[in-house]
Image (cartoon, rainbow, N blue to C red; front, side):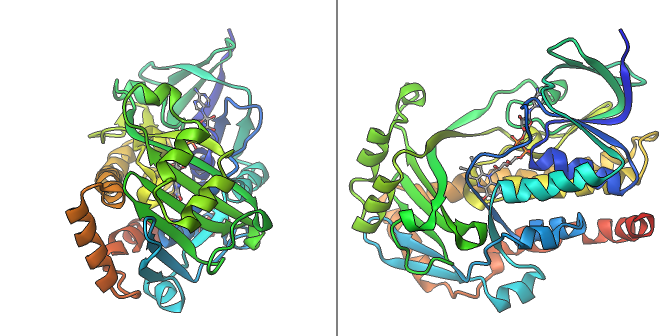
Length: 404
Ligand SMILES: Cc1cc2nc3c(=O)[nH]c(=O)nc-3n(C[C@H](O)[C@H](O)[C@H](O)COP(=O)(O)OP(=O)(O)OC[C@H]3O[C@@H](n4cnc5c(N)ncnc54)[C@H](O)[C@@H]3O)c2cc1C
């Protein structure tokens, strides 16, 4: 059988895979993307993009394209889902932008994926294939063999697993299962007129309560409103059959009027169970490396899964240094990415627990702390939003600049 030979094969064409292919190509490394879906597309919901990932998108040369449909929220507002009381606000205005160098933006997922896809299509070093489901990846020592379920086979010097939570490529590194969080999310974006009016439609709003939360923000230049209603299913059996809109309405029934009516208006949205995995000690095995959810699936509470995937791709390209004949740079990728993304995975779980606590004492302490914090207190966010890649990417960016 003829085997197509490539320098790098990227398995998976989500935000992480396309971002990585583009970063590699911009550093001079050709990348071939295999995506199992017939088209490159994201779920019809929103994405919060912190300044660390806006910075990453800038480094990929996509800032104008992303800003074209982004919403720049004025504030993050956290309220009690039970009483409606505003507990704290986070100022996302000029002070925030000055502090981190980039804004906090919210977008439709496809408005992040499309610019990545267009840039990949336009780049001579990126090739893209749909309808290719990778079934097996074999490291043969001098190359990697990538076998698709339709019998198609390819080889490469390096394979990048960007194939999400149930990654095939990850099986070369670990044999582990997703961990169900006990929560499901009903999420979707709808035209803005169909929603219950929010206090200020440019805010990111988070309502927290026992076993539930509701996240709301505008997308598509403010023409659509994204809502994510999350609730706990009480036992493992409900993981299979407890995600209907009846359960959603029942779990939110003790909440305040505004939250209840919003949730009721979106009961037909799609339900997704939320999973993560235990952190890995390494993202590398021989000629295979994983990025994004394939490497470090995390619960959504920090709004960082896709953001970290974009950082991964840039870091991988930078540490390889524009070539794949010598893969020693993978150790540096590992050393930079494992600690940072492990911290995200580990922080996301208790962060969510603090939102959902059913313990009245803990809830009271949380609320008291939130009421006291200043809107421009960014200390807790600095580790996420400061430039974690500055020293690494500086010289590589200069190199990329000269190649453009
Ligand atoms: C409710 C919710 C809210 C979230 N909110 C945010 C947020 O606000 N901000 C944020 O940054 N993150 C958020 N996330 C996390 C974010 O969605 C993910 O971390 C991100 O999409 C991961 O991107 P990825 O490219 O690594 O993986 P994926 O998006 O899962 O892409 C994997 C791709 O690989 C393809 N694929 C899979 N297997 C194969 C195969 N065998 N062969 C070929 N192709 C394959 C898939 O079809 C898919 O296209 C949220 C997640 C959830 C559940």
